[in-house]
Length: 453
Image 1 (cartoon, rainbow, N blue to C red):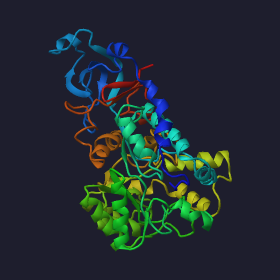
Image 2 (image 1 turned 180 degrees about the vertical axis):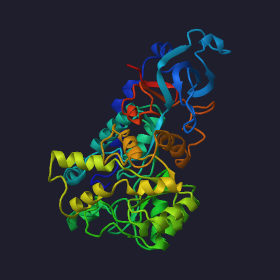
Image 3 (image 1 turned 135 degrees about the vertical axis):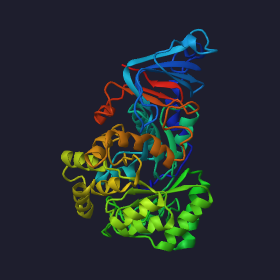
Image 4 (image 1 turned 30 degrees about the horizontal axis):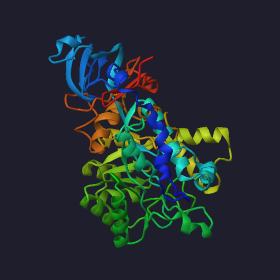
């Protein structure tokens, strides 16, 4: 994502303020299952621990936003010791229930791209992007994704949104945020690419480009000072970069190592945008925690990834975004960007087909923003088409993604003590993963965010 001209101001908070009106009065909330301190959920089938077989009819007791108990069968609320009179009951006896889904790679601030996105970069201010991010966060939550990792925006919009969601001021998924992504000068996240020289000073205001190991340490510390949860870097060129420098390595080994070492010093994981095998190898040698896209994995980098334990986040859904924009407007992308997109469409999924049989750890991620927000579950169909099973794809979007994000003790399964993030669908996603495109119930932290139809 590129930098915006407008600086971060108080307008971010002002822009988000209207979404706070979702709060209900205390009297009505006390009687509503959306906010009751005790809630009993009756499930027709329950996938409480993805990767293991689903359970039959089951009951979950939710207390103070967390899973308190899981029992076989449909148990009356009164059977739970201490359950108050009028305990809320959610009837999902004809639904398949599973943990809230996790998208490890999103850009909530926009889903504009190509020429349209470049125009938005210089025409929409911070307040506009704040509204856009809040709308996209709600779409994502309604699609059943209760946690996301936001890997890059320019103005601090999603850092503010992360905190607003956590405080209950606006609806949205739990956000793990990377602030502004880091690259070398002329690298994939250089915000000046494709703009006139006289605009560069206004665009490059967040210190996210670096050259040399010491400067790259500074860039990491800059993001840490902003309060980020994770560091995002680029070791290769990018498909959407407005520069004809290809998709190979664009960061030296000492620069990548300095970034990873500094991030780990501050207990921050590092997500690496990398397409070419050379840039993937440099990132893995430096100790990267995840490889995003990984379009040109070869046998050596697959083995390297398997040995290191790094996660692979395939982001196959980008091709949907490209195809849909080009169908609407054949001129949506121009020049070398269009050439790279055509290449990406043709090769997408090949690396996943290498990684799966090799035992590489896979975490679900869409790159939503390139594809449309709220359509995150489209990724499941592509993952299955390129070598995964519905079981392993769902595990990638729950237990694996939770582990990658450092939230394995909080989300990813429906076990006692975990946060009560759960969704329900009408079909069996273990038989047909596409049913996850139609989530008709969402609970996050014990609050019903999307009541069943």
